[in-house]
Length: 157
Figure (cartoon, rainbow, N blue to C red):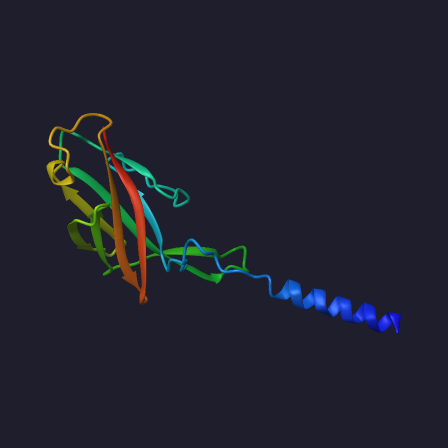
């Protein structure tokens, strides 16, 4: 009888732990179908690990930033000689926006997977840019029916 009670208690605990999984109440997440790297006027690509990279842009010229869109091919993940490959995605429409939602420009990625935004500092809301001036932007697009976004900051240099 005691053995039966122990089995019953263990079964109840197991059922209780199995039902403890909770959805994140704060953010509904969908995995991005692409890797997005941001490049400033210095030519350096962000490493993709920063949530909101800051990239430089020269204040003596129009503000510019490039977004590189890559699809990760994981078919060789179990072969150390192949690994994961990053393939450029061409023809994806990228919409560059201010964080207020104002659309700056729509650009399609080229054969190298790059979409470039070049615009005046005034259109970014900075009439007299100086070193350290910064603007928060968002780049959005759709790939394989999944919407993705990348937040980044352009900083005057």
